[in-house]
Length: 438
Ligand code: NAD
Image (tube, rainbow, N blue to C red):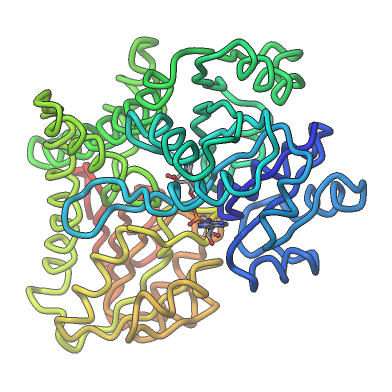
């Protein structure tokens, strides 16, 4: 089947590459000519493990190509996916649908009759119908169908998530659209991955409800962690004990510096706005948004305590600034709240991140970037471990402590054992939700 994918960001590019690997002929389109030039040279504009090889294999196989020319990409397609950004609209927290609607109008002007227009972007309930209205208003003669197909992949594990999904969700209104979607995902269907076919509104809601639930789970354990610190419990033990209950599950129960990233902050906000607009407030989610901000602020308080009440003149080494490991994505990362607070109060901040520098240089002005953690901690008063990259999981703790002015560590991902850090020569080790601090 011939497919066009609009948007070559984290979702569009991974989806396009994987669909071509399923055997479809996929043309990926982006407005950004630099991205398309790079892709045509075989370079990947984002960091996503394994994507380069998969892309090369399918380009070589003649199934995958890249262009800025949407009209050309739409020639002979049976389906076109919209995978453009839906960021938070400035001022009111709603999802900004400008890019989705612009893509819909562009599709209307050039798509062949019979096309299925699939929205993969995360969009509020009712958007697929608005896409259909926009298409009809732009080109009343076009015959088309719409389908909602929200994406659940995680950056850093995106290919595996796309190829081996927990489920595929498809919202449709017609037999034909359902048939086309089944054909697109046939390789998964054949391997028994669940495909949920439902109505447009339910498909749109599943995505927001799932993300809001996960954000709630993280925030729940973050609040329990704060309580653990007060009452002398260890949140790692608590998470383990909770997570073994099959009704709860052990995923997303790791205490940390607050959730961030390109989805949870904006999707929780958008769901809260949808609820308010329909006079059915999702108060749990509203609270989660508020508490998550408090969690990030609480981290700054922890660091301040470690710096004896003042960041001024302190040299702080920050390990990891991306919102999670294995991605270069910095959107709404906790580091964007924490690092500026340190710099704004007079700290000298040195940052090491395996992939974050490219984006981070723009977003974190005033920090000094270093490649090597051991060089970064030279003369430092504090290490702040913010992202649990594998590169930071087995550091030579004695070598770190030896190089520091005051060997103190704030491990905001709980990756080290307090006893090991202290045995290595650190005078102070603080983590999240564990009262057995040195
Ligand atoms: P992104 O910002 O990385 O990429 C969007 C791309 O779309 C950009 O390259 C942009 O140039 C391009 N674009 C915008 N308008 C265009 C147009 N009219 N024609 C051609 N190209 C256009 O975004 P993303 O992270 O891939 O997210 C896309 C959508 O998927 C969002 O709705 C997001 O919520 C959702 N989503 C993201 C993730 C994730 O982990 N990033 C996971 C699931 C769902």
